[in-house]
Amino acid sequence: MAQPFRTVAICVMPEHLHAIWELPPDDADFSMRWSRIKGGFSRHFAAAPARSMSKRQKREKGLWQRRFWEHQIRDEGDLARHVDYIHYNPVKHGLVCRVADWPYSSFHRYVERGALPVQWATDVGDALSLKAGERP
Image (cartoon, rainbow, N blue to C red):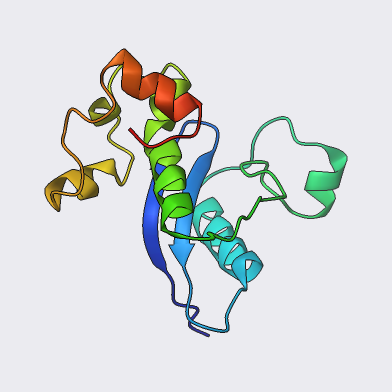
């Protein structure tokens, strides 16, 4: 069964990821989509060496947390803030100094489309604004 969605923004980090999806009208089944993504991904990897009894009993490989958090985007401003948060996440976690230096992010797609400059959020003022939840 196809469950289409469009990825608006995404950033894959070493221990978590953030994504904004656009789902078809009258379809809010995030859970099944995440389940299929996690299952498909996990089939390509061995189980984590130290898994809890609960994870072993449920045949979970220990790669993913069980839950996810969802937030319905309220308006264009809310969307912009969440896209910015996602793109800035590798800098926030100290993995890179510049957003452009993290390769596992839709930021590069935004740059290619001309929606963001490659040097976006590189000065201290931008970073402070992002931490406060405002768009630079």
